[in-house]
Length: 387
Ligand code: GLN
Image (tube, rainbow, N blue to C red; front, side, top):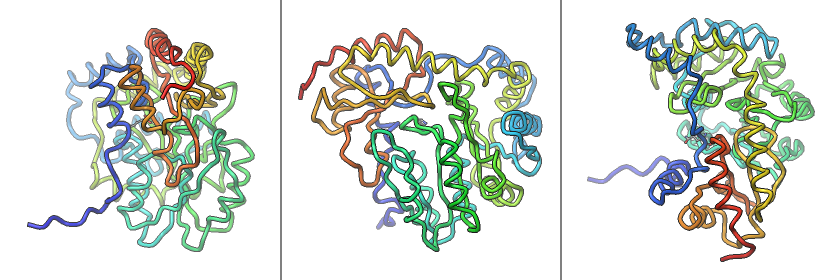
């Protein structure tokens, strides 16, 4: 038989899978795919055992258990000063990736353009394409990757349906500023442009900065899907529990997709998350200091190396320049690091449609101090200009 033409002819296996497999195969320390090598809070782990034993093992409601949606609504009111309705504006999804897909599938019609800022997380583009949309990529300039709002404005057309923004940003570790929010607000005012705020690292932000969620701003929130993830906040990326906050009309449309994409997310894990949110309300408030220390430990250790770069403003990723060490392109350099040096990292160019000249790689510092020390010892040993 003849197989159908690929719907995603240009898409290969995601870089996170490629690099994690390579790390395993070569027994390299995995600073590539972003996940902690330590466990979540004990309260959370014990709560899973309890709920599994107590029979919370059947389908959760399609929208997520109400207790968890209420906890999210309470948190949003405390930190972003908006009352969102847990019934009509909060939906639990299987990770942020599912929420992003469902949001795009819910609103993108054939021919719609979606603005994506490169480097862009790799799940955006295929979700747009599969739903008949056209991704319009705007490249941010390395090494700061600051948003140039004039370039963004120039990329807007009558077909622009939605803009995806991610802060704190993966892979670069940059964050949106008050000025960015102001410029974005001006840009969308009086239009029907929708927004996705990819906020999965909202609680991992440094040097006293505050995350500026679209939930905070009326002009932005009315047109937004604000998407977050428990995996990052509670050190349980493998649980794949995320959520989407959106005004009732947008939530209604998102749920039409979510109910047939996934129906519902794991019940016992949702109950366990309620317990930890009730019993450790300070957990996410302590995350900035927790991860800032890790960022600083990593950068301090790397200060002995021939890598260079400014400290990340948020996320648990540090991007560093390796141009003093090698002329290899970033994919080849990551392969070399993994196979020959024993540390896996992520190349930045794979997140760009037309990568600018740069020699940058991303390291995940969500690791125990022992892991960071071991990895940095290897990285520090790299002399200038090996090829
Ligand atoms: N968010 C993780 C990272 O950036 C990867 C998630 C995934 O593997 N799909 O490393």
